[in-house]
Figure (spheres, rainbow over the protein chains, first blue to last red):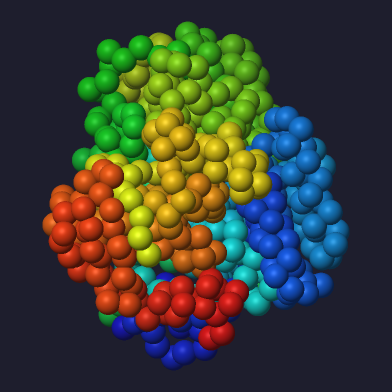
Length: 424
Length: 160
């Protein structure tokens, strides 16, 4: 009677059974840091050394991996120094899986987690970033932690978790044309609120999820974070196995929930009733259907981040931009260089450039207001990213509307928030 | 533990306003303190005094996992945040890093406590005394493991 999350956590804590509310130390399979949380962990190590602790080696350097994504290309001197710190850290501790910006494969950490199959079904994966939840679409338990907790995992290979209750979101039927996973997750967050899944796991299932591609599923688990969830998860199926096999991963121990698995609550959605949705400033729960916002003038469209710049997101954007030109400043930043290359090979980059868009390198960039196109006072942006808190993408008085890649691209064409179904 | 209250009467105060994104590249605790709450209250660093408490609504610390958020508050002198509820990563960062106490209060205490009130927090008794208003409020006890980690002075000092 255990669900997939309980089974993974029971196994990782060496127990035959766990129940929601139990607090257990679980063994971790993989841990990730990037150029913000990595230097944070290094600072924790320094603090521990000052207090007398000797830190000479990590628990298992082969289970630690590192990405450079938030402030690359180096936004300024401090950012450049942080990347140097990270390089020295991986060298010192013998960490070989370090995706260096500008060397082979690189990009946003959560995108690399699936593009490179860094995490496998049934594993416990933690990362120094709140959107670590993304990777739960691979059938793993994936949760974000802070610097102290990640430092603890790197030294001890384990961390405490309260076994979460699971909210089950069942999608019946295939999403209609012009409706994407992003619309579904925004709809959910609008319904349950930004703390509607606090401390819980959000599991997604039903025929609508079976129909959905792995990349689209990743959008759901990615934004489970915005409902406050500890993790998001989807049970493995043949689509996932094929996706992982394409990336060279065939050996892993899948975990599935029992037929009589228990959930705190089940929410059912009919795919045919879903429409393009937009979250207004200043919260992802502030949702309305896109058509209600057709009078909103925009200054900019941003297509990027772990949420909205996967290959299928770019294909969706290209479908809209093909043969059209943009009316507002539009930036497209593919989420990993492997995706950039695939977009090039498929001819998507040509479509983007013909439309007048700027295509940038893979980086978190303006999604977190770091650099690379942040917003000015009073500027209004539509974005495929995940958060629109005050100041998230730049000036505290800028405004961000969150939308799917299709809605964002259609809005780039008209300069106003546009439902792609209404595009002439 | 005695201190005075800085109250933000709102829900969902996220880590992007507690410590805005551009400062994520900073890892110097004193430097982070200068930017605490900058996205919500530009004067915070001028008015905060060592030992102060923040009182606020639901889901405090939601959003990004940045440990910079509890670090910036703690380095500013904040000893505890009293909220109706906390987002999970902020909560565990505050406890595991021993930066400040995340204390869950009820609606009655939330409504009653005013900006500038002097409070005395007695976690052993699970209560807060409002010295300004001469009242006492119950607080939600820390779950078992959390209480032990706090008593140990953070996760690294805790022996399972």
